[in-house]
Length: 384
Image (cartoon, rainbow, N blue to C red):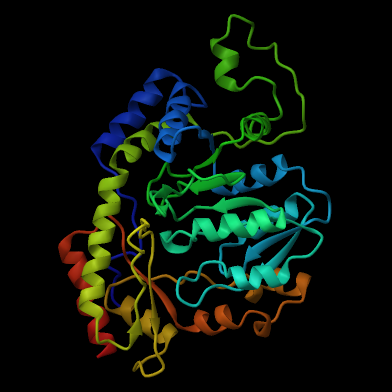
Protein backbone atom coordinates (compact mmCIF):
# COMPACT_ATOMS: atom_id res chain seq x y z
CA UNK A 1 0.00 0.00 0.00
CA UNK A 2 1.37 3.41 -0.90
CA UNK A 3 1.69 6.31 1.50
CA UNK A 4 -1.51 8.23 2.06
CA UNK A 5 -1.04 11.63 0.44
CA UNK A 6 -4.38 13.17 1.32
CA UNK A 7 -5.88 12.61 4.78
CA UNK A 8 -9.63 12.52 5.25
CA UNK A 9 -9.55 15.79 7.21
CA UNK A 10 -7.13 18.49 8.30
CA UNK A 11 -7.73 21.67 10.33
CA UNK A 12 -7.49 24.91 8.34
CA UNK A 13 -4.97 26.81 10.46
CA UNK A 14 -2.52 29.53 9.46
CA UNK A 15 -0.17 32.17 10.82
CA UNK A 16 -3.03 34.26 12.20
CA UNK A 17 -4.11 31.42 14.52
CA UNK A 18 -0.50 30.79 15.55
CA UNK A 19 0.04 34.46 16.40
CA UNK A 20 -3.20 34.64 18.37
CA UNK A 21 -2.33 31.57 20.45
CA UNK A 22 1.18 32.88 21.10
CA UNK A 23 -0.20 36.23 22.23
CA UNK A 24 -2.66 34.49 24.54
CA UNK A 25 0.15 32.49 26.14
CA UNK A 26 2.31 35.61 26.56
CA UNK A 27 -0.60 37.39 28.25
CA UNK A 28 -0.40 34.97 31.18
CA UNK A 29 -4.02 33.83 30.80
CA UNK A 30 -3.50 30.17 29.95
CA UNK A 31 -6.73 29.03 31.58
CA UNK A 32 -10.17 30.66 31.20
CA UNK A 33 -9.87 34.43 30.91
CA UNK A 34 -10.87 37.46 28.85
CA UNK A 35 -10.51 35.74 25.48
CA UNK A 36 -13.00 33.06 26.50
CA UNK A 37 -15.47 35.82 27.36
CA UNK A 38 -14.85 37.55 24.03
CA UNK A 39 -15.24 34.28 22.13
CA UNK A 40 -18.56 33.61 23.88
CA UNK A 41 -19.88 37.07 23.11
CA UNK A 42 -18.89 37.05 19.47
CA UNK A 43 -20.17 33.51 18.90
CA UNK A 44 -23.50 34.43 20.47
CA UNK A 45 -23.76 37.40 18.10
CA UNK A 46 -23.34 35.05 15.15
CA UNK A 47 -26.30 32.99 16.36
CA UNK A 48 -28.63 35.96 16.73
CA UNK A 49 -30.03 38.52 19.18
CA UNK A 50 -30.95 37.33 22.64
CA UNK A 51 -28.60 34.33 22.54
CA UNK A 52 -26.13 33.54 25.33
CA UNK A 53 -23.07 31.38 24.65
CA UNK A 54 -21.03 29.36 27.14
CA UNK A 55 -17.63 28.02 26.06
CA UNK A 56 -16.64 24.50 27.11
CA UNK A 57 -13.81 22.05 26.57
CA UNK A 58 -15.90 19.83 24.26
CA UNK A 59 -19.29 19.49 22.67
CA UNK A 60 -19.78 16.39 24.80
CA UNK A 61 -19.47 18.60 27.89
CA UNK A 62 -22.05 20.95 26.41
CA UNK A 63 -24.56 18.19 25.75
CA UNK A 64 -24.00 16.81 29.24
CA UNK A 65 -24.49 20.19 30.94
CA UNK A 66 -27.53 21.01 28.82
CA UNK A 67 -29.29 17.86 30.00
CA UNK A 68 -28.07 18.37 33.58
CA UNK A 69 -29.52 21.89 33.58
CA UNK A 70 -32.92 20.55 32.49
CA UNK A 71 -33.16 18.55 35.75
CA UNK A 72 -34.72 15.56 34.03
CA UNK A 73 -36.35 13.07 36.39
CA UNK A 74 -34.33 9.90 36.86
CA UNK A 75 -35.54 7.36 34.33
CA UNK A 76 -36.90 9.98 31.95
CA UNK A 77 -36.62 9.10 28.27
CA UNK A 78 -34.65 11.14 25.75
CA UNK A 79 -35.09 10.53 22.02
CA UNK A 80 -31.76 10.16 20.19
CA UNK A 81 -31.06 9.19 16.56
CA UNK A 82 -29.10 5.98 16.12
CA UNK A 83 -27.14 7.76 13.36
CA UNK A 84 -24.76 9.80 15.51
CA UNK A 85 -21.55 9.71 17.48
CA UNK A 86 -21.78 7.93 20.81
CA UNK A 87 -21.46 11.18 22.80
CA UNK A 88 -25.02 12.16 21.90
CA UNK A 89 -26.38 9.13 23.73
CA UNK A 90 -23.78 8.67 26.47
CA UNK A 91 -24.62 12.01 28.11
CA UNK A 92 -28.22 10.82 28.50
CA UNK A 93 -26.95 7.90 30.57
CA UNK A 94 -24.70 10.23 32.59
CA UNK A 95 -27.72 12.22 33.85
CA UNK A 96 -29.64 9.10 34.82
CA UNK A 97 -32.04 9.20 31.88
CA UNK A 98 -32.79 6.55 29.24
CA UNK A 99 -31.87 7.06 25.58
CA UNK A 100 -34.60 5.90 23.22
CA UNK A 101 -33.09 5.35 19.78
CA UNK A 102 -34.88 6.35 16.61
CA UNK A 103 -34.30 5.89 12.89
CA UNK A 104 -33.27 8.53 10.36
CA UNK A 105 -34.59 10.09 7.18
CA UNK A 106 -33.39 8.17 4.09
CA UNK A 107 -32.41 11.34 2.21
CA UNK A 108 -30.74 13.55 4.84
CA UNK A 109 -29.86 10.92 7.47
CA UNK A 110 -31.18 13.41 10.01
CA UNK A 111 -33.59 12.29 12.73
CA UNK A 112 -36.86 10.87 11.39
CA UNK A 113 -39.65 12.81 13.09
CA UNK A 114 -42.19 10.17 12.06
CA UNK A 115 -40.26 7.50 13.95
CA UNK A 116 -39.75 9.90 16.83
CA UNK A 117 -43.50 10.42 17.04
CA UNK A 118 -44.05 6.66 17.20
CA UNK A 119 -41.62 6.33 20.11
CA UNK A 120 -42.88 9.14 22.36
CA UNK A 121 -44.28 7.89 25.68
CA UNK A 122 -45.49 9.47 28.88
CA UNK A 123 -41.90 9.25 30.16
CA UNK A 124 -40.35 11.15 27.23
CA UNK A 125 -38.86 14.44 28.41
CA UNK A 126 -36.52 15.59 25.65
CA UNK A 127 -35.34 15.06 22.08
CA UNK A 128 -31.77 15.47 20.79
CA UNK A 129 -31.72 16.00 17.01
CA UNK A 130 -28.36 15.85 15.19
CA UNK A 131 -27.71 18.14 12.22
CA UNK A 132 -25.90 15.44 10.31
CA UNK A 133 -23.03 16.50 8.01
CA UNK A 134 -24.08 20.14 8.40
CA UNK A 135 -27.56 19.83 6.84
CA UNK A 136 -29.89 21.31 9.46
CA UNK A 137 -32.94 19.48 10.73
CA UNK A 138 -36.10 21.27 9.59
CA UNK A 139 -36.55 23.82 12.37
CA UNK A 140 -40.29 24.39 12.09
CA UNK A 141 -41.16 20.69 12.01
CA UNK A 142 -38.93 20.07 15.01
CA UNK A 143 -40.44 23.00 16.92
CA UNK A 144 -43.98 21.82 16.22
CA UNK A 145 -43.21 18.25 17.25
CA UNK A 146 -41.57 19.34 20.53
CA UNK A 147 -44.37 21.77 21.36
CA UNK A 148 -47.10 19.22 20.64
CA UNK A 149 -45.48 16.68 22.96
CA UNK A 150 -44.17 19.07 25.62
CA UNK A 151 -40.53 18.11 25.07
CA UNK A 152 -37.32 20.01 25.65
CA UNK A 153 -34.99 20.17 22.63
CA UNK A 154 -31.21 19.93 22.90
CA UNK A 155 -29.66 20.22 19.44
CA UNK A 156 -26.43 18.40 18.64
CA UNK A 157 -24.93 20.88 16.18
CA UNK A 158 -21.41 19.44 16.18
CA UNK A 159 -21.45 19.51 12.34
CA UNK A 160 -23.52 22.64 11.85
CA UNK A 161 -21.58 25.89 12.07
CA UNK A 162 -22.36 27.99 10.20
CA UNK A 163 -25.70 26.57 9.08
CA UNK A 164 -29.28 27.76 9.01
CA UNK A 165 -32.82 26.43 8.67
CA UNK A 166 -35.48 28.61 7.04
CA UNK A 167 -33.14 31.58 7.33
CA UNK A 168 -32.56 31.16 11.08
CA UNK A 169 -29.00 30.25 12.12
CA UNK A 170 -28.64 26.93 13.89
CA UNK A 171 -28.35 28.07 17.50
CA UNK A 172 -30.64 31.03 16.98
CA UNK A 173 -33.92 29.22 17.52
CA UNK A 174 -35.92 28.58 20.67
CA UNK A 175 -34.55 25.15 21.65
CA UNK A 176 -33.50 24.74 25.26
CA UNK A 177 -29.87 24.55 24.09
CA UNK A 178 -27.78 24.03 20.97
CA UNK A 179 -24.26 22.62 21.22
CA UNK A 180 -21.41 23.06 18.74
CA UNK A 181 -18.08 21.23 18.45
CA UNK A 182 -14.66 22.78 17.82
CA UNK A 183 -12.78 19.49 17.61
CA UNK A 184 -9.77 19.40 15.27
CA UNK A 185 -11.75 18.17 12.26
CA UNK A 186 -14.81 20.40 12.67
CA UNK A 187 -15.79 23.42 10.57
CA UNK A 188 -13.98 25.74 12.99
CA UNK A 189 -11.56 24.46 15.58
CA UNK A 190 -10.00 25.30 18.91
CA UNK A 191 -8.14 21.96 18.96
CA UNK A 192 -10.60 20.63 21.52
CA UNK A 193 -13.61 22.65 22.56
CA UNK A 194 -17.30 23.35 22.24
CA UNK A 195 -19.96 26.00 22.73
CA UNK A 196 -23.45 25.81 24.23
CA UNK A 197 -25.91 28.50 23.18
CA UNK A 198 -29.33 29.19 24.65
CA UNK A 199 -31.99 31.87 25.02
CA UNK A 200 -32.65 30.79 28.61
CA UNK A 201 -30.62 32.92 31.07
CA UNK A 202 -31.22 30.50 33.94
CA UNK A 203 -29.98 27.54 31.90
CA UNK A 204 -26.90 29.52 30.81
CA UNK A 205 -26.11 30.41 34.42
CA UNK A 206 -26.50 26.82 35.53
CA UNK A 207 -24.09 25.67 32.80
CA UNK A 208 -21.57 28.37 33.78
CA UNK A 209 -21.70 27.18 37.38
CA UNK A 210 -21.43 23.50 36.58
CA UNK A 211 -18.61 23.83 34.04
CA UNK A 212 -16.18 24.81 36.80
CA UNK A 213 -16.67 22.65 39.90
CA UNK A 214 -19.93 24.30 40.93
CA UNK A 215 -18.21 27.54 41.96
CA UNK A 216 -20.36 30.63 42.38
CA UNK A 217 -17.65 32.62 40.55
CA UNK A 218 -15.77 31.50 37.44
CA UNK A 219 -11.99 31.70 37.18
CA UNK A 220 -11.90 34.99 35.28
CA UNK A 221 -14.20 36.70 37.80
CA UNK A 222 -12.17 35.38 40.71
CA UNK A 223 -8.92 36.86 39.46
CA UNK A 224 -10.19 40.20 38.16
CA UNK A 225 -12.42 40.97 41.17
CA UNK A 226 -11.42 43.23 44.06
CA UNK A 227 -12.34 40.32 46.31
CA UNK A 228 -9.55 37.86 47.13
CA UNK A 229 -9.38 34.98 44.63
CA UNK A 230 -9.72 32.45 47.42
CA UNK A 231 -13.16 33.77 48.38
CA UNK A 232 -15.50 31.55 46.41
CA UNK A 233 -18.33 29.26 47.35
CA UNK A 234 -19.14 25.78 46.02
CA UNK A 235 -22.88 25.70 45.40
CA UNK A 236 -23.08 22.40 43.49
CA UNK A 237 -21.01 19.29 42.76
CA UNK A 238 -19.86 20.46 39.34
CA UNK A 239 -17.44 19.38 36.63
CA UNK A 240 -14.18 20.59 35.02
CA UNK A 241 -15.40 21.56 31.57
CA UNK A 242 -13.99 25.06 30.97
CA UNK A 243 -12.27 26.24 27.78
CA UNK A 244 -8.85 27.94 27.91
CA UNK A 245 -7.81 31.36 26.58
CA UNK A 246 -5.24 29.97 24.09
CA UNK A 247 -8.01 27.78 22.67
CA UNK A 248 -10.39 30.74 22.56
CA UNK A 249 -7.71 32.82 20.80
CA UNK A 250 -7.62 30.22 18.03
CA UNK A 251 -11.40 30.14 17.99
CA UNK A 252 -11.71 33.90 17.54
CA UNK A 253 -9.55 33.81 14.42
CA UNK A 254 -11.46 30.80 13.11
CA UNK A 255 -14.76 32.58 13.78
CA UNK A 256 -13.65 35.46 11.56
CA UNK A 257 -12.83 32.95 8.82
CA UNK A 258 -15.87 30.70 9.29
CA UNK A 259 -17.92 31.93 6.35
CA UNK A 260 -14.97 31.93 3.94
CA UNK A 261 -14.16 28.35 4.99
CA UNK A 262 -17.80 27.34 4.55
CA UNK A 263 -17.84 28.82 1.07
CA UNK A 264 -14.73 26.81 0.17
CA UNK A 265 -16.36 23.59 1.39
CA UNK A 266 -19.51 24.45 -0.56
CA UNK A 267 -17.36 25.01 -3.65
CA UNK A 268 -15.75 21.60 -3.20
CA UNK A 269 -19.16 19.99 -2.69
CA UNK A 270 -20.46 21.54 -5.92
CA UNK A 271 -17.38 20.34 -7.79
CA UNK A 272 -17.86 16.81 -6.46
CA UNK A 273 -21.54 16.78 -7.35
CA UNK A 274 -20.74 17.80 -10.91
CA UNK A 275 -17.84 15.38 -11.33
CA UNK A 276 -19.54 12.35 -9.80
CA UNK A 277 -22.78 12.56 -11.78
CA UNK A 278 -23.19 9.28 -13.65
CA UNK A 279 -21.13 7.20 -11.22
CA UNK A 280 -22.84 4.34 -9.34
CA UNK A 281 -23.19 6.38 -6.13
CA UNK A 282 -25.93 8.45 -4.53
CA UNK A 283 -24.78 12.00 -3.77
CA UNK A 284 -25.74 14.21 -0.81
CA UNK A 285 -28.43 16.69 -1.68
CA UNK A 286 -27.81 20.44 -1.47
CA UNK A 287 -29.79 22.33 1.14
CA UNK A 288 -33.12 23.91 0.22
CA UNK A 289 -32.85 27.54 -0.87
CA UNK A 290 -34.06 28.72 2.53
CA UNK A 291 -31.37 26.74 4.38
CA UNK A 292 -27.61 26.95 4.74
CA UNK A 293 -25.53 23.74 4.69
CA UNK A 294 -22.18 23.84 6.48
CA UNK A 295 -20.81 20.94 4.37
CA UNK A 296 -18.87 19.51 7.27
CA UNK A 297 -19.09 16.12 5.54
CA UNK A 298 -19.62 14.95 1.97
CA UNK A 299 -21.21 11.52 2.31
CA UNK A 300 -21.71 9.37 -0.77
CA UNK A 301 -23.54 6.04 -0.87
CA UNK A 302 -22.46 3.20 -3.12
CA UNK A 303 -25.20 1.63 -5.19
CA UNK A 304 -25.55 -2.15 -5.62
CA UNK A 305 -24.19 -1.94 -9.16
CA UNK A 306 -20.91 -0.34 -8.03
CA UNK A 307 -17.90 -2.50 -9.03
CA UNK A 308 -16.68 -2.63 -5.43
CA UNK A 309 -18.30 -2.72 -1.98
CA UNK A 310 -18.00 0.04 0.60
CA UNK A 311 -15.08 -1.45 2.54
CA UNK A 312 -13.24 -2.34 -0.64
CA UNK A 313 -13.86 1.15 -2.00
CA UNK A 314 -12.29 2.73 1.09
CA UNK A 315 -9.32 0.37 0.94
CA UNK A 316 -8.73 1.07 -2.75
CA UNK A 317 -8.90 4.84 -2.27
CA UNK A 318 -6.42 4.56 0.59
CA UNK A 319 -4.08 2.53 -1.64
CA UNK A 320 -4.29 5.28 -4.24
CA UNK A 321 -3.60 8.04 -1.73
CA UNK A 322 -7.02 9.32 -0.60
CA UNK A 323 -8.26 8.94 2.96
CA UNK A 324 -11.96 8.46 3.69
CA UNK A 325 -14.21 8.04 6.71
CA UNK A 326 -17.51 6.44 7.67
CA UNK A 327 -20.10 8.57 9.48
CA UNK A 328 -21.48 6.81 11.37
CA UNK A 329 -21.55 3.25 12.57
CA UNK A 330 -25.12 3.46 13.93
CA UNK A 331 -25.25 3.24 17.70
CA UNK A 332 -27.48 0.19 17.60
CA UNK A 333 -24.54 -1.70 16.09
CA UNK A 334 -22.14 -0.90 18.93
CA UNK A 335 -21.83 -3.54 21.66
CA UNK A 336 -22.67 -1.32 24.63
CA UNK A 337 -25.84 0.21 23.21
CA UNK A 338 -26.93 -2.96 21.45
CA UNK A 339 -26.69 -5.13 24.54
CA UNK A 340 -27.88 -2.64 27.14
CA UNK A 341 -31.05 -1.69 25.23
CA UNK A 342 -31.63 -4.89 23.20
CA UNK A 343 -31.32 -3.12 19.86
CA UNK A 344 -31.53 -4.88 16.50
CA UNK A 345 -31.11 -3.88 12.86
CA UNK A 346 -34.81 -4.50 12.27
CA UNK A 347 -35.69 -1.67 14.67
CA UNK A 348 -33.89 0.85 12.42
CA UNK A 349 -34.54 -0.17 8.81
CA UNK A 350 -33.19 3.01 7.20
CA UNK A 351 -29.99 3.29 9.24
CA UNK A 352 -29.32 -0.43 8.91
CA UNK A 353 -29.76 -0.32 5.13
CA UNK A 354 -27.70 2.83 4.59
CA UNK A 355 -24.73 2.08 6.87
CA UNK A 356 -23.10 -0.59 4.65
CA UNK A 357 -22.89 1.83 1.72
CA UNK A 358 -21.87 5.23 3.20
CA UNK A 359 -18.44 6.79 2.67
CA UNK A 360 -17.31 10.27 3.72
CA UNK A 361 -14.94 11.85 1.20
CA UNK A 362 -12.42 14.58 2.10
CA UNK A 363 -14.03 18.04 2.18
CA UNK A 364 -12.01 20.42 4.33
CA UNK A 365 -11.43 24.08 3.53
CA UNK A 366 -7.63 23.76 3.46
CA UNK A 367 -7.84 21.47 0.41
CA UNK A 368 -6.31 23.00 -2.69
CA UNK A 369 -7.61 22.47 -6.21
CA UNK A 370 -5.05 19.77 -6.94
CA UNK A 371 -6.22 17.77 -3.92
CA UNK A 372 -9.85 18.14 -4.97
CA UNK A 373 -8.95 16.87 -8.41
CA UNK A 374 -7.05 13.96 -6.85
CA UNK A 375 -10.21 12.88 -5.04
CA UNK A 376 -12.31 13.23 -8.19
CA UNK A 377 -9.83 11.35 -10.33
CA UNK A 378 -9.37 8.56 -7.79
CA UNK A 379 -13.07 8.04 -7.05
CA UNK A 380 -13.83 7.99 -10.76
CA UNK A 381 -11.07 5.48 -11.44
CA UNK A 382 -12.29 3.08 -8.76
CA UNK A 383 -15.96 3.28 -9.72
CA UNK A 384 -15.80 3.31 -13.52
